[in-house]
Image (cartoon, rainbow, N blue to C red; front, side):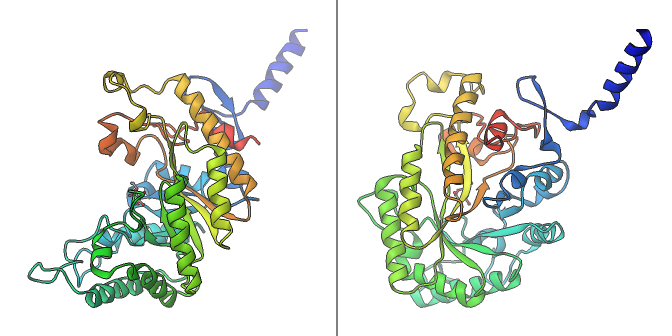
Length: 370
Ligand code: GLA
C-alpha cells in the first residue's frame, strides 16, 4: 500500500506541469493553459492575423516574450506618424521605426504602417512657410508626396498595409470632412492624392482609410460616402480600418455587423485596427458621483468586459474573409493610451486582454475558447 502510494505520488509529480506552464488569472485562480505555448495568433490562425500596436520600448525587455507568443502582426504606434518620423523638413528620424521593423523581420511578423496623413501629431513646419504663413495647396501636396514616397519606399516589402489617411471625417454629423489644416489648404483633394501617392510609392501595399466611431450611423454613412466617391474615381483604396476604441456597451453586435456589411458592399476589406474596450463609462453615461468613485477593476466590470469581447470576437469570426486583421491598441493594462486621455480625468483604465503583470485576463480565455 505504502509502495503504491509512493508510486502514485511519483507518477503525479512526473505529470506535474512546471510553474511556467501555468498562467495566473487576475483574481487568484490559476488556470492550466496552453497559452504559454499557444497564443492568440494560433487560436485565430484560420481566421485573420492578430496584431498589437508597439513602441520601441515594447520590443526590448519583458514585453517581448508576450508579443512573440501572442501576436503575428505589429502596428507602429507612434513612430511612423508624420511628426515623430519627419520632425523637420530636411530630417527624418528613423531609429524607432527601424527598430520595430527589424524586430518584425527577425521574427517574421507582419507590419501595418500607421499613418501617412492625419491632422494630429504633425510637425510644426508642415503647414507653414519660413515666415509662418500657410503654404499653398501645391506646396502642401508636394510635401505630402515627398513624405509618403520617402517613408513607404524605405519599408517597401516590409510593411504590408498602410493607414494612408486617418480620421478625415468630421465628428460633427452636420459636417462632412474634418476642418483640418489638410482640408483648409487642399480641400478634399488631399485624400485622393494621399492614396494615389501611396500606391505609386509601393504598388504592393494594401491601402486603408482608418477612422473611429465607425459604428455611429451618421459617421458610418459619411465614411461610406467618402470611400464610394474615391472608388468611383478609381482611387486606389483597398480597405477600411475600424479603429474599435470601444466600451462595455458599444457597439452592439448589430451595429458592428451593419458597419462591416456596409463597407464590404463596396468590395473593401475590413480590419479592426486599434481595438480596446474601455471599462470607464462614456462621458454621456457619467453621473455626478462618477468622478469621486474609485477606479477599481471590479469583478462586475470584468464580467461586462468579458461579455463585450466575446460578442465582438464572435462577429469577427463570422466575417472571416472580409475581416483581414484584428489589432489591439497597446499590449497590456500596464500601459494604455486611455489612461492619458483628458476624458479619463486621471482614472486608470483596464481595456486590454493582459493585465498589468502581463497575465491573460478572463476576456483572453473567453475569446480563445470557441
Ligand atoms: C487614434 C490614432 C492612433 C492613436 C489613438 C490614441 O485612434 O489613430 O494613432 O493616436 O488615437 O492613442
